[in-house]
Image 1 (tube, rainbow, N blue to C red):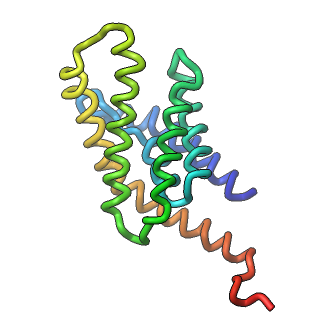
Image 2: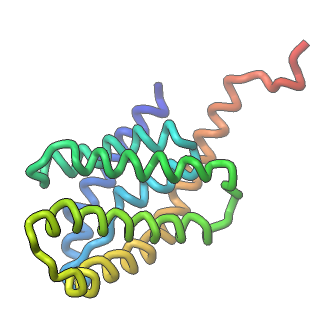
Length: 175
């Protein structure tokens, strides 16, 4: 129960940071996607189920306050968390290369999906301009910020794992 409360607070704090602090720190009118970092990281470190739920609530926060279509971002984030959860088996301690690559690929995929569903459907066909001015700068900024955020989320995950192991008897110690 305590883990769920901590994750809920983490989602809210990350959302507030993304929409306030990092909007003022925007570079070329592009801010990093902190909720995507959170979704990818927890999907990668904790598995598909946690990736789905964290992705759903992160996307829902964006939908409720910024989107005209409730559920679109929740669905996209949910799929991103789920797909990154498949790589749970390749999670290695202290290795930052794989999560940073996953965050970059996920941010690129998210931006392409948003472009297709929100701009291409309205016949706004200036994809090269959108790629140069929105997708690539946001992806780079998100990757740079993810290096810092990943370390914090990794330490939090270590505490979750330690608390999970505290309450369980190890299988080889059973009598």
